[in-house]
Image (cartoon, rainbow, N blue to C red; front, side):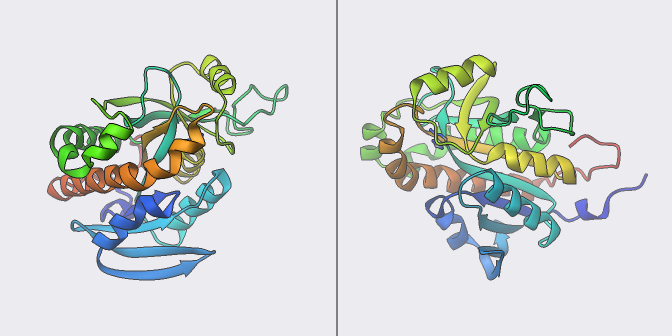
Length: 273
Ligand code: ADE
């Protein structure tokens, strides 16, 4: 059976939207080198013995799509992980919870009546699925983080201020759009139109479309920073600095160690992403 060459050695691209979320990972890189391309800094090196490339996409779908494409085409990554924050997409999801994408949709894509609402025209689909194996490993890393690392990782003061009592992990639908959602009614409308919605953010589904088109396995993990309502912007920046950065660091460390111990199976031509 023919096995695609680029899957034999794993190289993990790690995208975040904000500097604060990625600073710890870049610091942890061994033998790092820095390359500037297309107005972005790419950090190449080893993260817990996994060959990795870290980059800030900045915010929004175009920025994320450009970054994902460059990671694959120029830096030869074989897998992509997006780590970041999101607004809660449902009232069962709380600030401090972790969301792992089971599926992603671009909530501001609407070429109706030519195509059904949310469908990416001429691709024939609205929802994009991340790689199952990578997502399951991420799920394990997130659970272990909450169970084992949380007391060490998060200061009591932050736990108290953000009401992080018993954070949970959810797997479900993430909706991305070029809009910071800070309006209860807008969120309710999205939640009604997109069954199973767990989080709203601004990049994941763009990375998902690029990875679908380029046939690259990917996964998306988000810490919930706000309730996508009128208080969203107020909570956001402090949460990113003091909480989300820690989540990203500890969970990525657990994921890399897991990948190092048992590398993913090489994919065959016929395998699903
Ligand atoms: N990222 C974090 N919170 C968000 C929100 N409320 N809307 C969109 N993206 C977000």
